[in-house]
Amino acid sequence: MAKRKGVKIRIATLFSGIGAVEEALKQLSLPHEIVFACDNGGRHLGVTYKEIIAKTKQLTSAEREQYVNSLYVATEKENMVKKSYFANHEITDDRWHEDIRFLDGKKYKGTIDLLVGGSPCQSFSTYGKKRGLEDTRGTLFYDYARLVKEIKPKVFIYENVKGILCHDKGKTWKVMEKVFDDLQYNIFWKVMDARHYGLPQSRRRIFVVGIHKSLRVSRFTFPEVIPLTTKSTDLLEKRIPIEYYLPEKGFKWTTEVHRNKNKARINRDIIGCQTAVQQFNWSGDFRLEEPEDRHFECSKVFVGEYKGFKAVVRKLMPVECLRLMGFLDFRVVVDDKTAYQQSGNSIAVPVLKQLITAIYKQVDSFKEP
Image 1 (cartoon, one colour):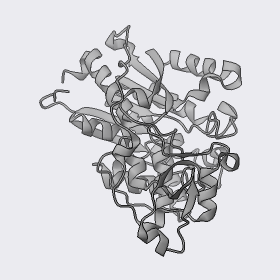
Image 2 (cartoon, one colour; image 1 turned 135 degrees about the vertical axis):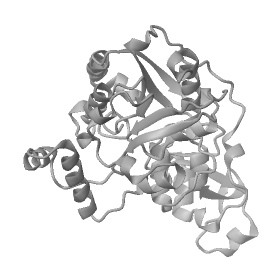
Image 3 (cartoon, one colour; image 1 turned 180 degrees about the horizontal axis):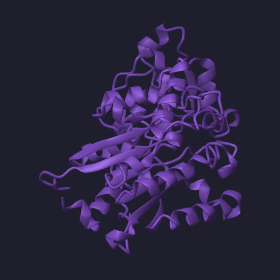
């Protein structure tokens, strides 16, 4: 995509994670400015929203947010999402918000070209309890909608699991559609699978694109499917540290379907959907390899038999999981377990690249200052 001389796309993200849209813009070589990002890193305050509002009802929105930030500090738990985000993207502390519920969008009104985010998916996912909008995490969707209404970005992208379409026999999605329709945006949505946009991962997600009605874009065409030319093995490391290879219990769990009940997958060219619970509880994708001398020499590594051949099984490294989400040269500054979670919670970067390209081509305001 050609660069716009002297023009930067002003972006903001909610439930920012490790910055998938920021990574997509980098890879597209599109000049951009991060106006703000927001993510609490999954930390819990131990106090309810109503209690905070009751205690801070005399404060301004800025003072309330400052008070909430102090509560997060008091937990003595570091925001690991923020740590990863700051290590990889150009942003300062004054542009980072901890909690979407207490973010005042009105101060950003008219300053954002593209707002991106997807409220936590556990409320709708097959991996969660599927409580939907009644779940505390599900209600964060309303905060996303509130901020769209307050900020009035030119375009927004909302992403979530495909399960919201059929949750509660479709009633949940009807409610969400009504909320979107009330925002004064032309709304377009589609289920997009990452493997159809250049990534060897089967990851089906719903993407909602909202284009402000003042821009007079009544039609939007989602990007065409791209033939997949890479396999998962193309994105893997050549030399793997010994600690990533599994002991006997892990070997048997991941290679025997009757044990793992399809929660573990071996040597797939197109991997299954990455999730936050991958690898550390032996779920997700694994690699089965021919053993080397060093595997026989290490007592922690199990050399077993698979279909008549000697073999070892290993976890994917965090850098490999990130690559399989489309992140290139991403700096990993957190422990492995956290890195796996952050990767599995992210949005597939190649899908966003194609979606942003489609928006750039079809929304004129992204081409002019």
